[in-house]
Image: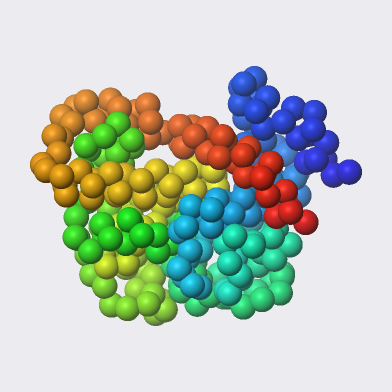
Length: 271
């Protein structure tokens, strides 16, 4: 039995949250890289299953990555052509910043490499990034606007998301990847005009949660504006709210209920 499995059975993800012992969640640098890697890959696989459950897949579009804890110029990513709903941890690819598949079988999505290699290179503090062509995110992206603070949840992104206000096709050229990373800047999220959403975090948990709640915030604003003119939350209130719902720990902990449920529902993903 692995150290990760022993730790999980002893404490459990719920116990870690309740007891405030978040080393397992954060990937404590004092833990062995093998243990951190295992946990990151588990979370990455679970994030794919959740994205599939929520209907975020669109053919072969969409990818989530996590930086390897030992080889920091490498990241783990889904192989092209495997449905989010069927992703298994054993299918993940380890890719370096030259675009070479170092570990795993399968094809590397060119757009995934172009986008994520630039993010991981320009934002060394970022561990994970998520991008998909989910319905409400791509619908909102056609408006070429940032999200407004119209709900408590949307305040997580107040003054903390950017807009890439051009669309030049599938992101395959390195210059396009660089432009995307520049537009992301120091933010936690980016709206790619006529394309979709992208979110980042210092954990897979955080990046995945920001994507999920941003997709829902896009849906909420589209529905609200279809019905009338939403009332905006005052900037100072939005800032105070962001300090509660938009922090790294808020993103980390908000993911845990979803992770717990998907692990119970679909344990085959760790085969």
